[in-house]
Structures are given as structure tokens and as C-alpha cells.
Amino acid sequence: MHQFLPYAWFNGECIPFAEAKISIATHALHYGTAAFGGMRAIPNPSDKSEFLLFRTDKHIKRLTQSAKFLLTELKEDYVLNALEQIIKINKPDKPIYIRPFVYTSDLGIAPRLHNIETNFFIYCIELGDYLSPDGVTCRMSSWTRQEDRSLPLRGKISGAYITSSLAKTEASLSGFDEALLLNSRGKVSEASGMNLFIVRDGDLITPGVDQDILEGITRASVIELARSMGLKVIERPVDKTELFIADEVFLTGTAAKITPIKQIESTKLVGERKIMKKLKSKLIEITEGRSKDYDSWITRIKLN
Image (cartoon, one colour):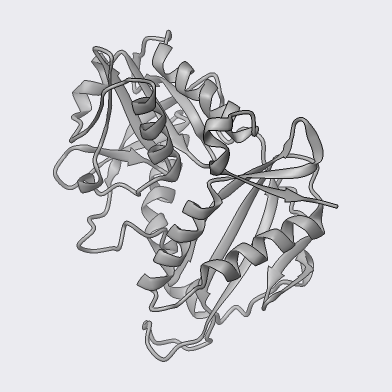
């Protein structure tokens, strides 16, 4: 059961979460004409009066770019102001997940993006580990990741997540934690809501942006960190068989953070994961505001 924070941003102001309601005739509800973001924020371990948001600028930029696919202009400074206000009014004392959402708010029935009203809201929930930090089991999904020529996959468009939902439930009902999807060319694309990395012979490998992946912010952060550590990072197509013989396999995402895959279908994977552990340790250090080199990745919001 989700623990929602008391206040949401709705119609340009902070109001009680229970009062932030939309009509059952809302256009986005019927056609998936919406875009969303997902951000993690935590209390500063060394100063509980301060909240830390990870890569706020990147998240806001992706959200405003996603809005463009809906023919909607969403100003970055407006989103930042709303985020600051919603954090300050809620005064959270636990790690949270923030969900900003831009959507077609008209009550019309025609599927369209022109001559239509749009709106924007934010709500927050308390969130610990989305996936087990000890590792997850995965199956190859029978569902195929969509192509960019049919959906704007570089945006987090809500309608696109029907495939993720089908894949996740298929995996869960067949006894697995997560699903891995192939793209239309038969190459590994991503999980239901996470990017994928493998390690082979000391190289960090991940499907490139030409493999119909979401351009994940945690993914980009891991790539940058890996290169700063002197690791060779290769973005290229990945075959299903590579997953079974890789030295390490792990997922990245805002909710998932960095999560190892311990089993794919009936095959148990090796568990040492030296490179993943090094990257995860550094990412935790950054998100907790303990890395001077990457302090620019953190937005600090005073609760008082």
C-alpha cells in the first residue's frame, strides 16, 4: 500500500492530496496522452532539515522534452518551483519518489493533440527499495519493445507503458520478479522500466539509444561514472545469449537504482559483481551528498 505525502501540486498550487482529482472523462485517461517523470529524493543523512534530489535538471529537461511530444510547452523553471514547493510543504522525513505528470486535461473524446487543454501535477510517495537489492530473477518477455517509429520512446509517454505492464505481469505470474524485452530486431532492449548493463571481460556494455530504449538518467549517470573510473563503456546491440555468459548483469533506473540480476529463466548467474558494486557504492555516495566531485548532481532543498 502506497503512503502518499499529504500535499500534491495541482492546478498551479499545493493542495491536500485527497482533493487533487480529475474527471473520469479526462482525455489522457482514455488515450494515454500524458508524459511523466520519476525522481528520488532523500533526507540528507548529515542534516535532516535538508532534502536531496538527484539530477533534478536532467529529470526536468526530459519531462519538458516529453511534453513537446504532446505539443505542450512546459517551462523548466515552473517545474523546479513546483518541486521545491511540494517538498517544503510536505516536509518528508523518509526517502520518497516524486511523480510529475503532464497530461491532456480536456474532456473530449477525439484522439488528438491539437486544440486541447493540458495540465500538470506532482505527487509524492514514500519509497524504499523498489526491487530487492540482493538481486532479481528475470524472464524473457513474450512482448516486444515498441519501435521509435511507432511511439516517441525518448519521452516517458504514459500510453507506451502498456507493454511494460503486460511484460511485468507476465513475469510475475510465471514466478519471476522482472521481465526483459527484446526489440523488433531480436536484440535485448530493456526491462519493464529499467535499463540493462552487462560486464564482459572487464568492459561495461549496454544497449545503445538505437535499440529502442528509454534514455535513462540513471543509465547515463552510470556510464559517466564508469568512464571516470577508467572502465571501457560500449553502447551496442546485445544478444539474449550474452546475458547467460556475462560476468555481471544488472539493471538501472530511478526506482530500481542499481539492482543485480541473479537469475534469467532457469539459469543462475554469477554473483561476485565487482564492477556493479563499485558503481553502486559511488552512486550512493553521490545521492547522499557525500561526493564533492559530483555535488552538482544534487539539488538541496531546505525544509525549514
